[in-house]
Length: 265
Image (tube, rainbow, N blue to C red; front, top):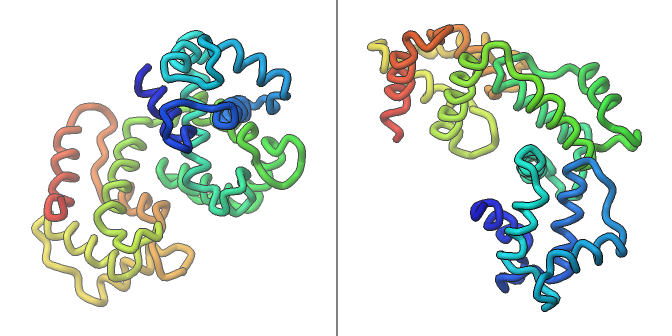
């Protein structure tokens, strides 16, 4: 409970007063409603909400008053969805306008697919996705529309092989943390070479030659943009690393992965 209230304060207590005034509370309430796919609160609805939780009538919401609201009205599922939507917009809403256009949505879907070791979304798949979730047909996704997507796909549809996908996603995350030095979301040739040489070294193999590296890069740089995406790296891990199909042998894989990145820990 305390962590949820802390997260609310970190995002909405703009003046760091330790309380939420009416303006800050209004932003919180409308973001909460939007994340649940509901319309914004009218002035009448907001006043009723504020008066209900402002127990001591001091025209501000304290952390204790917010804790009562969270405990009484926010289900775990709703809170989780709201948090996931918030994280999605923080990461992919590049222009900060509170909407995801098709380009931003493509980046979101591409990362989800990459973390599952699946191919990038095609133009047809993007268009089909928008047709289903862009309810008002305005060519962008609101927080409410993204919330519908989160509820349907990120919680309802689990990958068939969760164990394998989770390991690959973890390996990709660690790879990017260690080798994506410029933090642009891709590995250029120099970053990829450093990754590959250390990958080979941990298996007792010498560094690759220029010819070997160029062959490797040409095979996995599928779209020929001179960098390796997370999706392309997922293909490498699925092809060249031993992912167990059950818990048997998992310790061996974890040990292998740890050794790959030990030098950079």
